[in-house]
Length: 345
Ligand code: SF4
Image 1 (cartoon, rainbow, N blue to C red):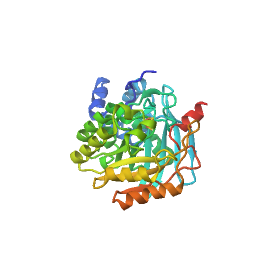
Image 2 (cartoon, rainbow, N blue to C red):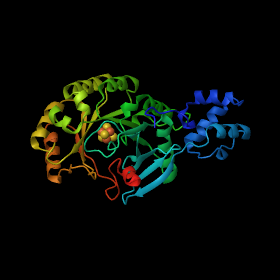
Image 3 (tube, helix red, strand yellow):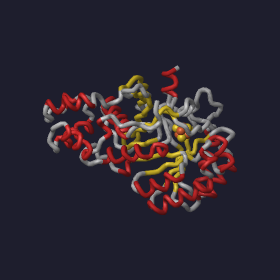
Image 4 (cartoon, rainbow, N blue to C red):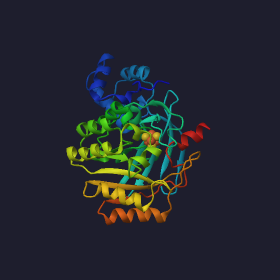
């Protein structure tokens, strides 16, 4: 399978691009907006597009027969979390997770099938990268999940399988598509992109999308510990990453979130917490402590509740904003990449 995504899904296109497609098929310009509107509402077939002329629908169906991914496996948790394995037309499978929070419903989507970043605690990277997803395929996960759950989705997090900044162009396209007020119209502040620390793209992102939230998977208080579990740290060192993150907050005026999976014996000591607090003190950040989702075939274990609490207390004491992420979907295969592997196995 090719690594670079090829756009051939009708969800990939902006209303302007759809105009070119529609007029090329002999349709009138304004039909493009109608089609875009139907797609954003979650239409799964052309038959639903009742105000679009039949001959145009037929021509579109010939070129772009289907667009929403098929849900090949679904798991529902008691707490309302829904995890879905979606399959695209070429057989590529990715995972998305729907979650209910006090502030509303959220979805975590994938930006690639597999991942080449090699984080040693992660299931998504175990088979490497199959291919990146197109912007339309990312949008398809949101629309299909909304159809499946029958619930509005007001927040999108790009934190599923894959490294979004390893597929920057398509992630950018997705953000523009879902934000478009002629379609889904999701506010930019309701979108979060999570990176493992690809520095040049952090800088680009700050300029391109200053209103979109950025989360950085940090998982360590220093370079030595970070590079043990995250190969990306060998290319983009810790101090350089911290400088880029500071620059991000200066350019955007926005708080940056650091994700920190608390792993037993690796990064959960009081010394680690003190070191991290020292680095982040007085800075516009938020630390999200995440109990690790343990993955079959990986040696890491989540830190116990006591050391997570100690970690949090130390950050608190130093005035660093910190929360312990509520674990959702504990009774299902919540760790990203697990559902796909289990299904394949
Ligand atoms: S944690 Fe994210 S960046 Fe790291 S291997 Fe997994 S999917 Fe890729």
